[in-house]
Image (cartoon, rainbow, N blue to C red; front, side, top):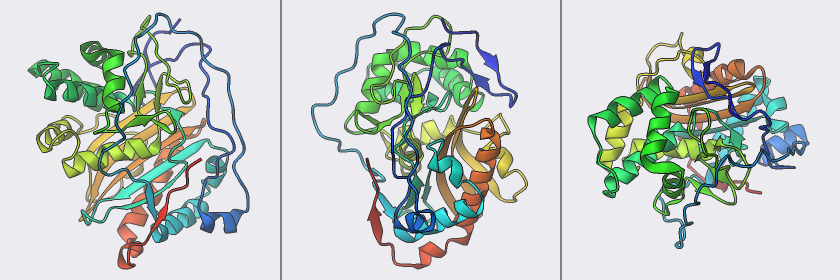
Length: 348
């Protein structure tokens, strides 16, 4: 039985998972490219967990797309120089122990030039429990339903879905789930024109409304109810920024609903003392030891998308340190002065 929704110490609305909820993560995953291997010479440890309880009620599963993914901006290629510089900075910041133990993932896309997009990441296809972060999939599913004529968008959508994102309102998130259903959300994230979830790497997943006694539909990859990968979270903001999330008009409208953030913790707190920083869109998540954050950030003339997920009591501290490391990387930008040669992203 789910427990009551409560507020975390950071002020964000969080949804308590089922009592016997545990995260099922991938085992024995290589966390880095050759540069990090040569420095550390170690692979991350394997991790496994038992499956959660059976759903409260069966939910009809949306059909998987019969056609291959045709979505833009897959972010499957890492920029070698940016990747090496990110790894070096994360190592210097003392963050590698969490990355090696599969307790932390990070993805960043530098959008400052428009094209090319510079992408770097570690553990970016690791499916993790993400609490409220996947509420971005509820926004996406409602916009997709309205765009296809399945749902009529109203002023109530604007009010409720903005509160769902900026205030992390669980009541409004549950309302958003009710409009399209769990099957509608799954259909949207699996849609071949969007491709935010697949059965190999996972992605954005909402398998339960954010309230008590809701139907449950765990994801097939990690068997979590509210999950994400860092890559797919970053892709959401990259597509939003490029006007390719459903359409230019819907991209602009969803972007308008995703700021300003009302909770000043994690990424927001980490950059609070830096001048010229604007959060164009942001969604974080917190439950127990699971801390995650994602954002589209503008700093001076630079713009980037970032997502990070963690399982640690020190998750708040990790999120603040990660965004500082990435912001420094973006402002330095030495990799932009080197001809962009990509390295295929590592996949299990």
